[in-house]
Amino acid sequence: MTNQGESANGVLLELQRVTKSFGGLTAVDNVSFSVLRGEILGLIGPNGAGKSTIVSLVMGVYQPNSGDILFQGKSLLKLKANQVVEKGICRTFQVEKPLLNMTVAGNVLIGALLRTADRKEAREQSRVIIERLGLGKVGHVLAKNLTVQDRKRLELARALATRPTMILLDEVMAGLTPTEIDQSLRLLRKLREEGVTILIIEHVMRAIMNISDRIVVLDYGKKIAEGGPKEIAHNPSVVEAYLGKKGVRNE
Ligand SMILES: Nc1ncnc2c1ncn2[C@@H]1O[C@H](COP(=O)(O)OP(=O)(O)OP(=O)(O)O)[C@@H](O)[C@H]1O
Ligand SMILES: [Mg+2]
Image 1 (cartoon, helix red, strand yellow):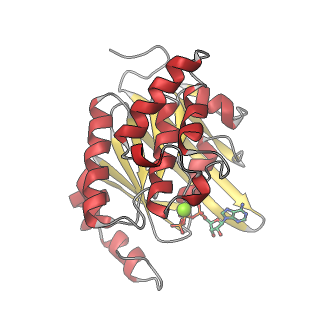
Image 2 (tube, helix red, strand yellow):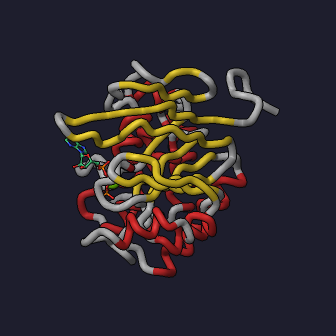
């Protein structure tokens, strides 16, 4: 069943020839790709390739210089970040941005209150999400006192509390142990089964290759490849983009 406004081929989010420059630097250069409903799409590329900028463009933090971004067939341009969240898209930040002087529970509650004015219901939803993310023991801890790993979990919990149709994950696995990465992968698969569409940015190659249905590769702001994980791993331009650079994180 397709929702109203969604194209027949199940495209949920579509970037159409999107360009974003900061002064003389073109951070995103004429990039087009689609994310299908129910899909896990990996977005990869060396440092500075433009991945996080794409997330900020979708969320309305930046306006593109040209091009369009459609969600369920309608342009997101001109919407503010809170309006994009109301449409059912949410993000996590690469550098975690919880409200530091608020507890874990308080941070998650803010997300939940976006969907319901009933505080009791919002509290119950928050509790379920907090447990699910393994944050039960630190529910009353101030965000500023969390470990980096728990802050990453809190980023995801805050995002999920808004009950998104689509979630944009910007390096939520950085700094996690292999066991924690496996836990995250299981959680993401479960979310997808529940109907959440996922765009995931990650430098942990094992994770991205393992979980993505399709992968889009950026380099210097340009899309250089798109395809299934195996296809991408053997694509000469992708190998060149990664090996040709110094300082690429390769964990
Ligand atoms: N607000 C900004 N002002 C000026 N330049 C910016 C801004 N945001 C990003 N850039 C530049 O745009 C380019 C793309 O940055 P972006 O953060 O999107 O890369 P990335 O692919 O997410 O990299 P990383 O893997 O290191 O997170 C970089 O050269 C970056 O320095
Ligand atoms: Mg980034």
